[in-house]
Length: 190
Image (cartoon, rainbow, N blue to C red; front, side, top):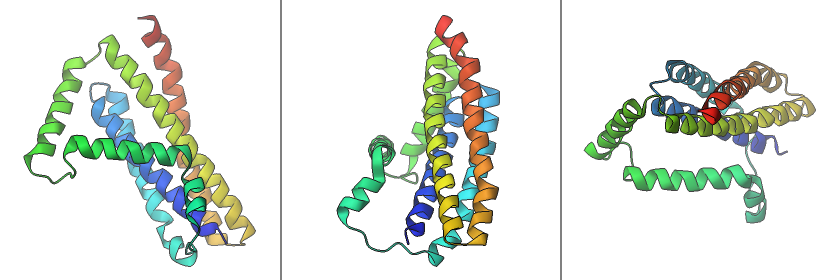
């Protein structure tokens, strides 16, 4: 069965969404609604990723070929990998790498305060929201696929977990969509 693969992809998508929600909130601290809601949504997404970890033991992933692994990673997997490499190279490789990561975080925070509500910050926010929309779409479709797999495998417990978690991801998707609708006219005409 490939249910284990669906669990892994869903968990990975939720973890990626969590990280991006946290990044967007930190980068846009001056936008109070964005800052506070992204923190809340990130915690919910983190909780959902943890909720399905226990099912990975029930459905271990059988060793696939390298071609299958590459096909499964897809565009988002490639983008995540490249983005992760970029972030790691900028931050010096680790969060606990001494004072450097603190310096980067302080610079990011002060930059957010300085940019504030300038037109450029609106474009950055719009781009961040578009990225959140894409990541939450990926997580949402993964929850849907996992739910279909749980139903086919007649795993009531896993199906219940998907029914509990998927609406949270849909909430993030809807929030990002609403924010894009609200922000884009202001940003594009200013």
